[in-house]
Image (tube, one colour):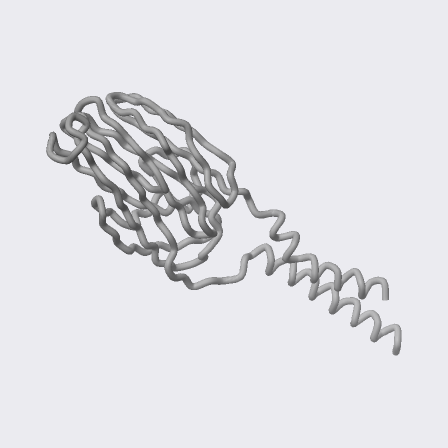
Length: 231
């Protein structure tokens, strides 16, 4: 009877043990321009995080907020930026340790924002090209500026646009948004970019399956031993 209860406890505890073994998501932000680069990271789990303002090259970034809204959603929810002159800025936001969906999936990338002239407070002075690229990284790398290696490109989207791309996951993975801004004059920018999973072929987590299988085997052995003792 004692062995039967032990095997049953293993089965019931398997999902809890699997949950405790899951990694806590990390956020990483790199802002780079003209050979100058600033990196910040935060262990935030699922939720909202505010990054400190940074200055690189001709750019000053402030009011920076990012969030994990669910298991498969990464959002650079606020990013305000001013440029004192022309130049190019690259923003890389990465979230690690996403665990779902597993397998083939589709991902929706959306990019919104506004641009205003620093001289007049409105549009018209100078020009700017602003775009976002979203990536999935099965290597689950936090500090990978521009997602330069090991990443699958999901979508490339211009400002105030959206697109859907596909990828295959095989375990814990990272999502990355890379925003590139090129401006010819002093300007203000307010940006919001997100990437989210929209469909997937889900499979049970390997660790949960292994623990559940161990419990079932143990239960089977107990029943077999009990049957022999009864005989």
